[in-house]
Amino acid sequence: MKCSLYALLGLLGLAACNHQPAATTTTVGAGAASPPSAVASSPGTSYHVYRALLPGQADSITLHLVAAPRSFDATGTTGRFGSYYGLDGHPYTLQGQPSLTPDSVVLFETSPEKAIDPNGPTLYWRLRQSGRGDLAGTVGGQPTRLRLVQPAAGALTFAVRYFADSAAAFPKDVQSPRGHISLQALVPTGGDADLRQRLTDNILVGLRGDTLDGLPPVTLTALYKQQRQQFFKEYREDAADTRPATADTAGLGTYAPGLSYEDQTNTYVLYRQTNLLSLGFFHYNYSGGAHGAYGTAGASYDLRTGRRLRYDDIFRPEAAQQLPALLGRAVRPLVGLAAAEPLDKQLFVKQMPVTQNVYLTTSGAVFIYQPYEIAAYAQGEIRVFLPLSELRPLLRDGLPLPGSGVVAR
Image (cartoon, rainbow, N blue to C red; front, side, top):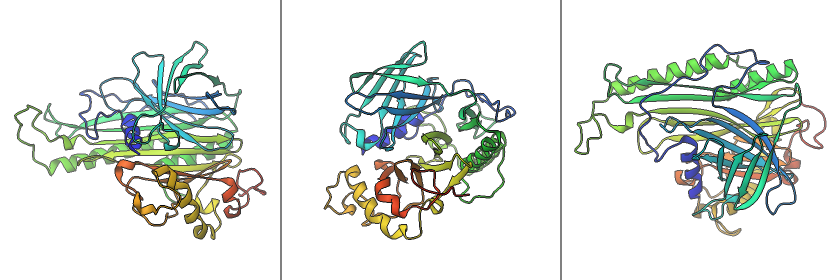
């Protein structure tokens, strides 16, 4: 599972779990929010959908690719995150890697099912942008072409908004370490105005991390300002409780590197088909110590109503008794266990717990276990896909899935 930790480092643009950020920072997109129907992506960001026939596969795949500034390092490169799936609805994730030329896109597989070797090399997508917006190159060394999908006029799509800022721990000291915060969000644009507004409000509630529905949403700009203010307040309070470390013989500075705090929030499309949308809200926080904490919260939305579908909206009460066995069978090959081997040979648990951190595809559901939840930090997030064929008796009626009956309001 070593590729999971490497995927995190690629997402954050880190050479190690704790790094020194760039000396200068910028704030992008911190102005007044545009109306949802007219919002534009922030500079240096993009959201695109591609379709392709991968080498050796009979069915085409759909790829959702989000690009935004790459963390707080000094390279000035673009970070990318992709999720793709075929007709079976099983989603897989891709992470961007810095490239030498602006029109080059290098991605690598982060799903253990797609790794060449869970403890070694992974599968790379090496692509180059064409004049028409397509991506052409190789996947695993085999030639392929990803064709850009242009949204239909007036169709629902997304703009990417990006905010970033930094503050000195000790404002009067020019050598002070800095704390950095960023927020990257997807804002619905186009489509039916009422649906777009309901969906926007529900996405903002999810981006804020609310675990209950019905709380009043705020604008994206207001949400960022709240998070920024709270982060800088806590950062400076922590800094005030520390004493600058004595300069070491290597001349690394007078402040401990643990004061280089970071807080990042990112939003990605994990799945979209017909009336179903699933997003991932990724959050990373470093506030001292050996490494930061991170995790992804999955969220599904009914595009007929704009409503978020939480665990209790998806599953019948009796599912809690049947899911552990299904999850236990599905997780074993992901962590290198044979069918008869006990889970606690690789995990912290003897039986899989049923997490409510789950999102839907039209062919199943993905259960997300964050680091330390069932396994060591080095194993990263563990995402377990269960197909619709196994889940059908456990699902509520009215879901935006094939054969689910009446719409749930």
